[in-house]
Length: 279
Image 1 (cartoon, rainbow, N blue to C red):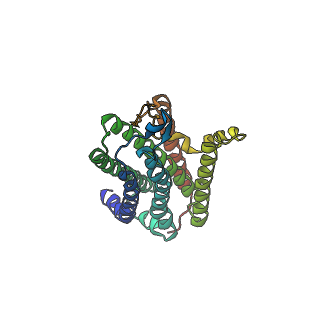
Image 2 (spheres, helix red, strand yellow; image 1 turned 45 degrees about the vertical axis):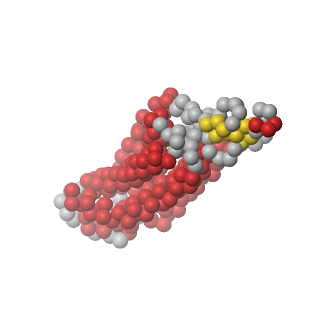
Image 3 (tube, one colour; image 1 turned 90 degrees about the vertical axis):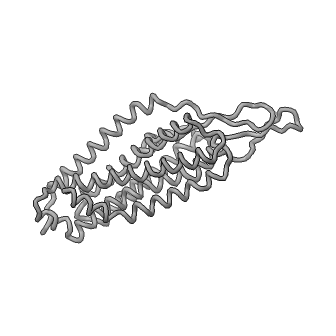
C-alpha cells in the first residue's frame, strides 16, 4: 500500500511543483509595498482633507494572490483528480490495479489521500514562504497578522478541498465518461465564480443590491479572506489595522465543510463501487 501511494505521488509531482511556482509568483507583487496593512495619505496643504494614498499591501494581496489562488487551487484539484482517477480509468490502468491484492476501496482511498496531501502541502508551503517573506519585508508585520494569514490559508484549504470533493464525486459518478466529467466540473466551477462575482459586487451597484444573495449559491461563501480596517484620519501617512476575524462564522463553517467533504467522498466511492470496469 505504501509503495502504491508513493507511485501516485510520483504521478503528480510535476503538477505540485508547477502550481507552487505559480502561487509563489502571484505573491511577488505584494512585496513591492513597505507595509502589509492599507494606508491613507492626508493632504497637509488643504487642512484635514484625506485622499487615498495608493494601494496598500492588503489591496495588492487581494488582487494578486487572493483572486488568483481562488482560481488556481480548484484547477489544481481538478487536474489531480483527472490524472489520478479519470485518466487511469480511460487507459485501463485502474483495472490493472484491481488484479493485485488491493481492493477497489483501498485504491480509491489511497488516491484521495494523495490528492488531499498534495493540496495541504501546496497551501502550507506557500503559507510558510509568505510568513518568511512578509516578516522580512513589511515594517508593520507582527504576530497578529501572522495569525490572520494562517486563518486565511486555513479557509483556502477547506475551500479547495471542498471543491476537490465535488470534483471527486462527479468524476466517480461519470468515471466511464472522462470528457463529460471534465465538462461538468468546468461548468460547476464557472457557475460558482460567476455567481460569486455577481453576489460580491452587486451590493455596490445601485438597484442590484438583491443580487448579493447569489454569493450563497457558491462554495466561495465558505471562504472568509482577511479584512482590513480603514486608517484613522490624522495628518500624514496612516496605517490601517486588521479587523477582528469573524470567528463565529468560521466556527460553524468548518464542521459543515468537513461533513460535506466526507459525504461527497463516501457517496462518490459508493457510486464508483457500482460501476463495471472491464479488465
